[in-house]
Length: 386
Image (cartoon, rainbow, N blue to C red; front, side):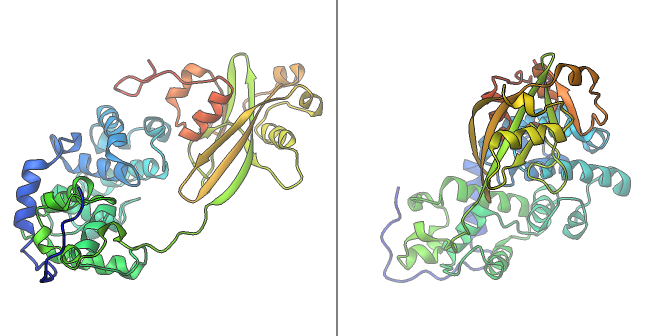
């Protein structure tokens, strides 16, 4: 439904305390039944908040349920190997979140006796916990008076206060955070934060907001001033995504495929992927694929290029990169394959299709493997291969 016609008298910006009561009444009636809201705990709140960064709720729900079933508390997560954690995160994207979450668990166990600190400053000292996550956890898990400014909150506040400055500027975000914090009531701070997020998700949507269903429409300056709410918040155009072209090598040995672990600083760091390399100008893609395979320990020489098969082209769009992969099947020399040894199994290994579910595999890597007809088995509710 679209916004109602503006009134003749512009509404003032919402005053501190005026907005909380109707918003919380609405939240009590319309809040979604989400797994992290059942049996809430500081641990479950932290896990959910990290998973929800840059990821929609519907995608997060099954990952959250599998994750907390396998790692029910900080102690269990701290005791896990990084590979176990990234395997359960496989397909969720932004894999640094998984590594940070495990390191945060280690810090909570080592420095805080296994209990998550409740203050924003202490939370921000944990690996991977920035201002938004610290505020969200402090408010939701401990009812501290804090405000977590996410995309939904930015949109709601920009419309409530008729903020026309670009929201992706740091100064504007700081201004919106101050406005949001001023609205947080002295009690039920966690519910208020979740209500703001819920309002943005269910009512104050990016396009065609349902203003007639909004519990705080009487306080909305943007609506009262007759602004085009679809155009708020204002955003400066982002730079065009970087176009990257890579070559991927599919090398198989006795039914196993060669995978390499992406290194710190690389795209999808910590996950397992086919050997790959950026294709330099003037270099044939198949030659680039051979170089990537050889650098990863496969015995592929010039003679093997004659038997190379182009398996297809895979495109994957990341936040700041548009990646196209040329995928090739390469054959090892028989003698070389017999002599070759896996000198660094933590960096590259030969993996059977049935073992892929035990590794951290990105959606992009799944696409490249699918080009070769290789897929992982489905996982059960505990994240184990079924």
